[in-house]
Image (cartoon, rainbow, N blue to C red; front, top):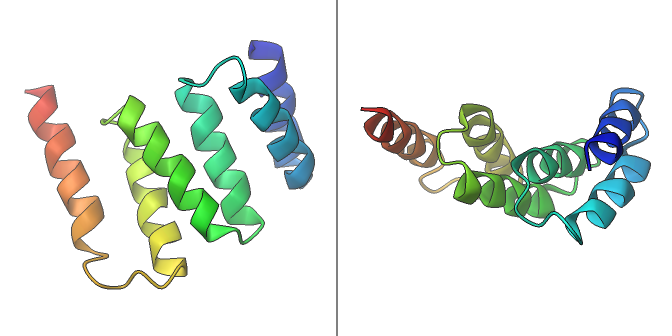
Length: 104
């Protein structure tokens, strides 16, 4: 898994977002609970302007790792891009508050 994610990350860094998405989706077939895979997949969807799928992947990353602040932040950005403006500022704030409570 590490090698596939590393290659997908490199593809993403070089603007080969669809190639990265394809590798990550293949990885999910055997590693469905991988936080880095869901998060990177969300970033790639965001970069290809597939904001609805970005939201789904960031939420999956947060379900698996509720304290992942980058996923909270990017979830808010993606939700904003999908037109989910109602309560958009509350969602990241609520997730951050929950994460802080879990740390205590």
